[in-house]
Length: 271
Image 1 (spheres, rainbow, N blue to C red):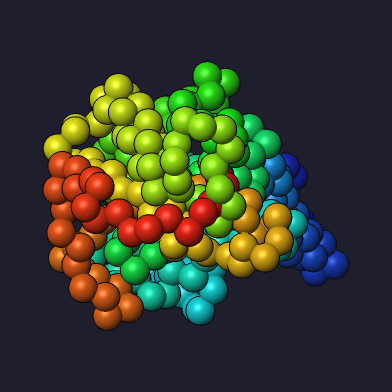
Image 2: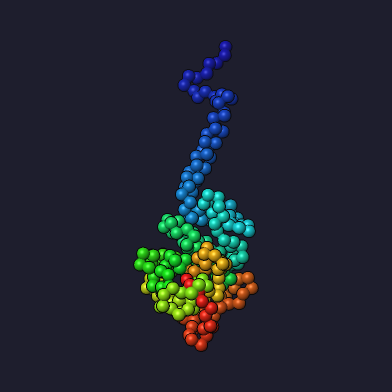
């Protein structure tokens, strides 16, 4: 006589129910994916960099490997090439931290295109449009925009590097009679930013200032769009021990000497 199965025992899983295990795993993975996408949906650069660094650590590889770096802002390329940096020098980490912090701030304040972080031969340049900081022909920081310099000072405070503030103009003559030429205007603007950085707590021994007038443009002065780009203040984080692109290190002092004997004849300019 066949022995009956004990009552109350667990019944075996039917073969046609095994798909539930695979389905549950798939739902779990989709949930994790959607949570990640939601976390990145606000195009917060700091979150993106932290997320990328976490993936890099998990997979033991560099998320940013390649010729160009991309952000999550609508799929558009918005980060400069960092492949030229020597990873052993620490410039890459500093650049990414500054780029994330400043870009995030610019997006929140609606200043995209007026504040940027770019790699340059001597290190890292934080570029601020002069029209954001100064009135035409003036070298006094506009009260409503001094917080831009204050935010930059906060980002620079943890770094030990020397910093050079450079003033630049376009090739049109200065408006008003306060400044005779673009050299003097660019120097005065660089000094105004330097003094604000000192007021924000940066060590004056780390800082230097220089004015280049219209002689170091980054765009053509043939149209207003190019001239607007050339009217700027560059805050350079210097890495003199590891020059890039074969350039030689730049001597760093408390203040670059700028006086009458070294000023070339002005060619006119109007920031």
